[in-house]
Image (cartoon, rainbow, N blue to C red; front, side):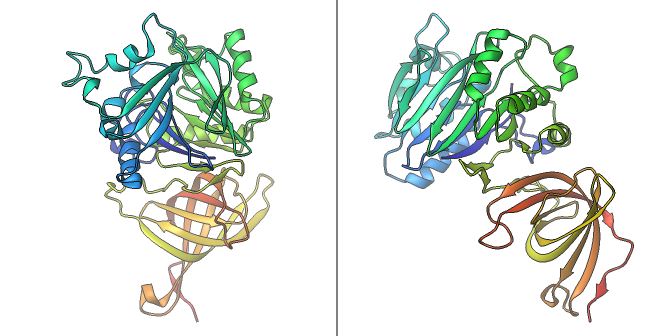
Length: 400
């Protein structure tokens, strides 16, 4: 089972440079099963990019998918009118949700395209569309078992768990802790999951203060659930519109100190279960629109840092992506994120045109992710995204 993130933002899209690394599109996830079945969770603005990707992949072949909505707030449905496969004849889509309104599921979904909210209605969509109201009992979706649980959110929301291909994945967004009934239901849903994608929109301080009652959660509650329920990996999701990349970095770092297998959801992140392999780790340079140009390289690298006890540690690895302000590299072991890292790179003659040259850099870890493509084909590695804080004390030295 493979999960890909197309939209990770909450409340409203924020296509701004300050959010370039994590992304500004709202909630949408793609799930692919080993048998090729396609499941889509939530239909926020990230759904537009998913639609373009599917069209490029399938071409003229029909696209069949099961779509599951957590609830009907704008940031979770606003991508539907811009999902191009819905306009293509021969495609089939089954919409599912635990409906908590007096209207039917079809009417609720199509309502956002009614006059005067959209220039055309859903009748122009040539794909076949079907609608199914879930009642909370587990269902089989092309070989996957899907369960839902009610979450604590204004007007209602549900979390989903997918068990398939030997892995278990839970999406629990738009949830505010503190309701005993909902807290219990969520923990039952998350028990022993390989991956929990959880609402980390607010800080614990915001949640206890001005954001109380808004229906969202924090990294601290996500960590608490992960620990209590034997979750293997935690992804913080539904980032607040006001939280830029640096702010989300801070939330992730705090969570990692309590639960190391924590990451922040970013657009394009792809995770394979049950192994937990991250095949598309976050690029430290942001989107391709950044002025700060990134260079894709593969250079020998030595990292040196001190652990929590003050002991000096070293690891040989490979630099794979570098820019003026950041570096992305792979080493065999995790690095103490609290300490600066001394990096030593060897530039070949093909780059310097004056012989091999050694340069030293000082970096600070932003995040680390376990990856399947380690330093050799038969090993795993740790991918590290770090910000560059300057050069080492020594100028570049030619190697003899």
